[in-house]
Structure formats: structure tokens, C-alpha cells
Image (tube, rainbow, N blue to C red; front, side, top):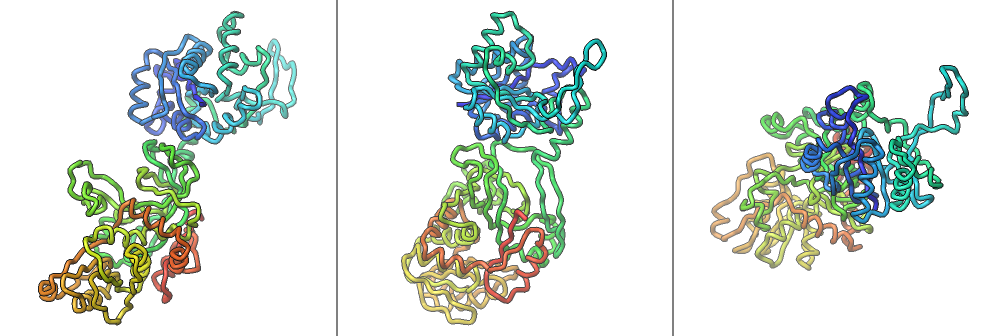
Length: 550
């Protein structure tokens, strides 16, 4: 178990501030918060101990609670020197059973999680690790105000933190220092060197600066703006017009961070792009990043089952409702995605056309290794049919009406889950007499499709409406009443529906069918306008995919 000790006990004397420099704010957050961010994002760290001035114990504890720094297991008072504070953290870690330590200055908020992980990995070599950066300046050694020596720069480094140790070496080095009367060491590696241990160097890079003077705070602010929470977002600002810009968001460590990899254009995206939504809807929802069907890659996760690098399907339903008795959220036959308090990606909320997306853990589903991204990107589309079937009370003979992607995907799902071959009825074809219909025509074809279904339906049949239309669709209520038909609307799905869809795609014969959904040509995000124009004008059937990384 690797424990990080964050030394936050400085009083800010050299900085010239009444507040310790680690408690000063950058971008609206204390410096310490950015430092703790990095150790929460590192995969090798299991626990964090913060050592701070006794006057700030409560404030640091409140910061950790407010920002959900869940790896912080203790906040302990430091000593009068850095060495004493470091020893206090080591003793606390030893009491908690730590076997390996990284000791880091809180005033270095730009430490990279990758450097932290590399430092832990290298600990096995000698038991001591020192994070440093190669000096780019000529170093001059002076004596009595004159140049005494100019050492060879190739062998010189600037010392940084974290510094890593096994618990045995850390305890022995500090105990020996105290016994020898050494009380004000400037770092911990020099104490390990005193008792004969070697230290391996890990490159920390030029940005791992320590905030010591007021000018350092401004440099750190500029570097943090470029490093943390920065996401490129491509938004539709008005029909046929996209705008790309970078936005800065405060990281939320309670959520997973996902890098979108591949997205699919759906009919709803095209309606926004072409302006085939009401003027009121366009005014309320634009500018907005489009796409809600897609896959991504985990870049940060607070839950162990979703590790960094895991490929995931993105579930576009956003839970906002806080009412535990909500009829929609608490009833699985309705579902949280129909609660008016909740939201949906690319429907008033930025969708997948961005480089970083933060989501609740239940909004991402790990993709089975056997399912490639080009199949997994179709999960949301297939999950609509899964959700519709899950909500049914009836069985019997079934058919799908409407030969577009939604209809084709629903036919695949229905044939598997109903365990019978379900026919797909094309435009202008007569609907058969069955017990269960899935209407997937939508748009201008909805009226004819629904009319054909109502006319052909057996008494008591169920009609599931899947197709979305911007037009008012007249229906024959007299026949609905005479036949006692059931109409069920279904356009969204739950995380469990996505899991079922992914499981179905593990079946080779299902995968073969799903592959036919995608058009062969794939576009890059840098060609987004071309991708949407192609999707809007295409005569061929299928889904247009966008590589969201390029």
C-alpha cells in the first residue's frame, strides 16, 4: 500500500502573506486542493495524509470534506521544521500500516499523476526515489562572493518532490537524524543518503514548480489553466454553424472523467443541425455540443471497478432529481430518463463533441473486450428496443415497422429477446396482423406507419411508438377504441438496458448484424461540418460515425 504524505505546514514567511501559501487561492481553489487532485488521480496512491499547521487543521478537514478528497485518511499537526512535519507524517503512516511512502510539498500543485505513478513504480529498485528535473541553467558555486567553480551541467538536477521511501528506510533515516542532532534537513532524501542508501531519479519535468514567491503563484495559475479541467468543446451555435473553443472546469472528484472516442450521428442531431426544430427549442438549447450515442475512455475514476483506460459506453441520461419518492425515478417500468427534473446529453446539455466529459459512475458501462468500439457505439441505439421490451406486459407475434437504423436495431434486439424472428416492414408495405408492433418510422413517415399498424392490429394489440417526429401526427382513435389497443411511448433507456445491449453484441451473429448499421466512411471531429452534411444528404442507409479524438 502506497501512502502519500502532503506537507502543508508552511507559514508563508518567504511568501510574505498572512496565509500559508498552500491555502492561497488559484482559480477559486486553494493551492492545496490542486495538489490533492493530482494524488487522487494517480492510480498508485491508496491513502493520503495531510500534515499542516495546528491552526489550520479544521480548515484543511473542511476542504477535504467539501471537495470529497476521499483518499485523505488523516489530517495531522506538523512540527516547527519541515523535517519534524515530515517525521510526524511518517509516524502516522507507519501506525496505519503503510509499506511505501511518497512525501510531497503541498506548494507544488502542478505535479503530474503520471510522475507520481512512476515514482511508486521505481521504489522497488533501491527503496528511495527522488523526483528531480534536469537543470537548464549554468550553475555557479561561489565562495566569499567570487566564482569558485562551475560544475558540469549535464550531471545537475533541480530537486523537487515527491520523494519516495519504503517505510523502514524512512523511519531509520529520521531516527538517525534525530540521534545525530540533525533537526532542520531541507528534504528527506538527504537523510536517507546519510545512512548509506542510494536514490534513483525520476524526471519531474519543468512545470513541477514550488510556489515560494508571489510571482510563482501567477506562473502556477497560468500553468493550471492549461492543465486542469480544460476541455475542447465543439458546439452547434445555430443551424449549419459550429464553434470550437476551450472551457475551464473545476474537476469534480466524485465523478468519472471520460475522454470521448467515437460518436454516432442520430436523427435528433440532424434536426438541430438542419434547423428542423421549433424556433423556441433552438433558442433555448443552442449553443450545444451534439451527439449522445458514443463510447469513451476513462481518464479518472473514484471507483475501483472503473480503472483508467477502461473503454466505456456513455449512458446519456443525467440524474438531477433529488426526490426519493419520484414516481418516474423509482419505477423501473418508467425510468429516471422520463423524469422531467433529469437531463439528457445533446438535448439542452453539451453532448459528446468535447475532449473531456465528467459523468456519474452509473452513466458509463464497461465495454466487453470482445466488442470493438465500432459496435459498442451502437449500444444506445439498441438499448431503445431493449427498454421498450422491458416495459411490455404482453408477448405474442411481433413486427417492426420502419426500416431506418432505429427499426433495424429494434428488429435485432426483438428477435433475440422475444426468441422469435421478428420481421421488419418497409415504407409502403402493409403491416401484418400481430399482437405487438414497434413503430420506428418517425418523421414524415410516422402518420402512414401508425395508420397501417392500427388498421392491421389484432384486438388488444400493443403499439410501441419509437419514432420521433417534429410534426403533429393524426391517429384513428375510433379504431384504437374499437380494438382496445395499447399505445406505449419509448425513446430512451436505462443503464441496465445498455448492459443488455452490450451483452447481445457479444453474440457473433448479433455482432454481424449490428456491423451493417455503420456507414463505411468515418469522419474526424475536425471535419464535423462535412460529416453532418454527408449524413443529411446521404441516400444510403446507415449511421455516420465521428472520431472524436481527431
